[in-house]
Image 1 (cartoon, protein in one colour):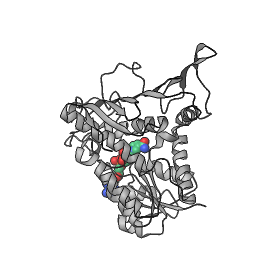
Image 2 (tube, helix red, strand yellow):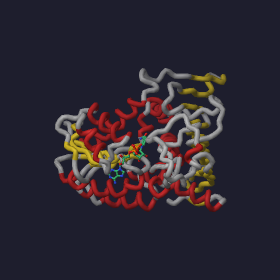
Image 3 (cartoon, helix red, strand yellow):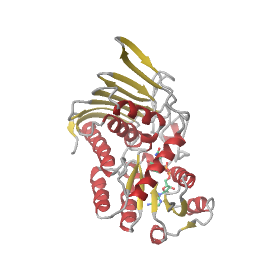
Image 4 (tube, protein in one colour):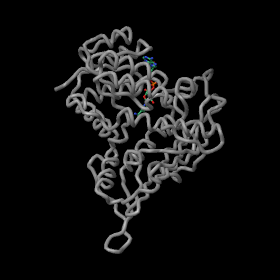
Length: 359
Ligand SMILES: NC(=O)c1ccc[n+]([C@@H]2O[C@H](COP(=O)([O-])OP(=O)(O)OC[C@H]3O[C@@H](n4cnc5c(N)ncnc54)[C@H](O)[C@@H]3O)[C@@H](O)[C@H]2O)c1
């Protein structure tokens, strides 16, 4: 069975949704964005796809599902409107900009009989699937520490635009990049009860906008008269009810010498530990074998560093959930959990001390 999907938010990632939905056998049937050119630019690429004049028109049309890929502040309103209109929702990360907003989405979902899946795409990366297999088979034993790093050296996205305007984005790299690695570490380890967090967020590079030297500018170019009132780097230590600790480092910009700070997740378990970059092509495991210390580098997939595989897996799960009425693992609770950690890190940074993570 195939179904019809609409795209709400036709920017960079809305296009990836449209392409992946199409490649997954769905019919991209309608589009909506606040910017008219963007509505038509996706619609024109897919035969039979309607460029709608409003979100209401899209939601009133004959579609079964929507992908919500708008700026973070609008996740809540778009997801709730879609659920109330009886559409299944694939909602981009972060779920929203605060836990309170996540709760509103969860309530709207509970009142519907539709699927709500979060765009926690890293869960479907080939290396994530490989690590999960090892963990589920008990090969790591109890995992007592996770170290998560997502560094960009000079990669503030859309400087001056919605990404760097707190009221629109909810924050900087912590909510933008941190959400991926925080969620993935909690998902893989099964440590799903974060209790306390201590964090610090800094802003060193984005202002003044005209002086910022960069190597990449997702969602650019820089808007010289725009706003930069979010962090461009954050560190945190998160404690979990089961004793696990998680260390987080995220930057959109930092003076890190090239090649000295690998991105990715390090998991330390009592029987084995590993390091991997979510979109890298290598998984390194340290363990013991027959009484000897052993390093293992498994050849875990043909498409090892293929982001596209993660996206296709994300859509495969969404389609499965819609068709079979199942709950996807990247559900509202997962989206809320990672948001609760992010909220706590921001609160901790403001308070200058460790704080409780909202349950
Ligand atoms: N999964 C990933 O790896 C990944 C990567 C990048 C971005 N994202 C997420 O995708 C979302 C979009 O990011 P992007 O990089 O595509 O940004 P973008 O700026 O390229 O696109 C966002 C689009 O949303 C539109 N928009 C904003 N509010 C709207 C509303 N209320 N109704 C309709 N359209 C609206 C804007 O006009 C814009 O075209 C963000 O939530 C971001 O966090 C996810």
